[in-house]
Amino acid sequence: MNHNLLNAIGVGHPKLDEIHRIATRHSFACKMTGAGGGGCALVLINGAPASDVKNLEEELEKCGFRSWEVTLGVPGVKVREMELDTTSIANGAHSTTRSTI
Image 1 (cartoon, rainbow, N blue to C red):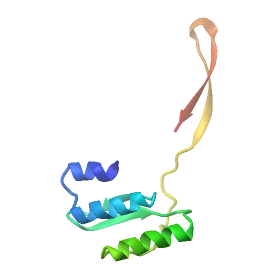
Image 2 (image 1 turned 135 degrees about the vertical axis):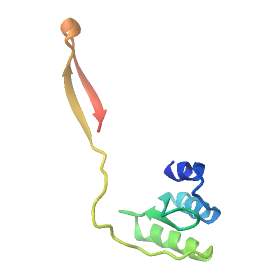
Image 3 (image 1 turned 45 degrees about the vertical axis):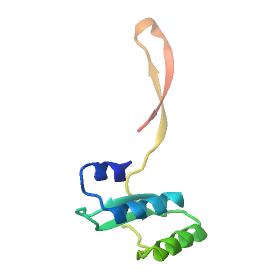
């Protein structure tokens, strides 16, 4: 979704779209990065089987792209799910609400 939003504001490039299509076809998340106009794309491979990563790299290379595997210095944003126990003041009813934060 982020890749498409960046395209909508005019910072995309057909080659970045091609990388995005290849990564998506291999079930990886991908987005462009940089100032736009054909810079660079990030493909998240964390935890993927080595064979899947190799297949992705081979297809990217076959299409004329270079890739580098890097480790980021921080884990990034995480989504955690927790149960919140809420009590309704109106009518004294009790309910449990499941929220994602």
